[in-house]
Image (cartoon, rainbow, N blue to C red; front, top):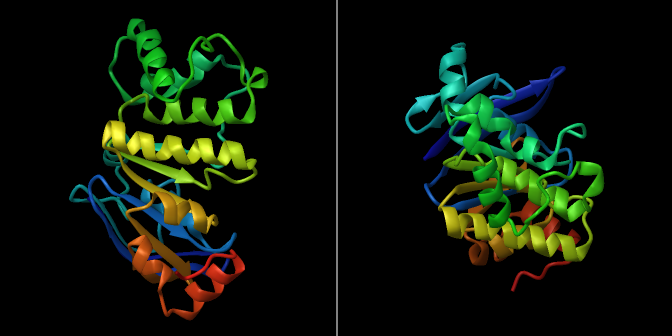
Length: 246
């Protein structure tokens, strides 16, 4: 379980996260929605301590990592996470095999000789075969997303964080990414946290949806309940997104 209690974060005197609290349960798919620039990416970067919170707690499996200065503790907890960056963040100079295996070198004690087998296995899970020797420049946008996801799950994490996974994608590729996210949860039992401005995606894939507004979660509910929310910020965001409340 991941527990977030009173999480705060500011940049240059501007508070982005003011009082964010939530419990993300084992095996669930928890989505955080809200307009661009509202602090969604900051939220998941604080969870994995890519950013250090100014206050509050981030408790991962009983360990509070919000304020720890122990690199050993952070490294140990981070081994439990996979992270799908918004732009994929593949290394252009590396092959697909080298990209997917990148985390294995730093996060595991798996012998290097096992890397090709593991990479092939993870690529198959995301629907890719025979691309190990290609470079990112030779891949389509959808294929790059798949490779990025394969890299995220290569070390078999307990949790995976998705940062705006469908931003800039066409409808077909968006549908593919949606299916990948749900498949990873179903096949691997991974606890997933998705931050997105795509309300439709969140409502279709999530076990629960949280609305970030004014630095805190103003609504956290299952999709069917979320659609009927009476919260003003939720209603307005749903209307802007052209979604009914039925």
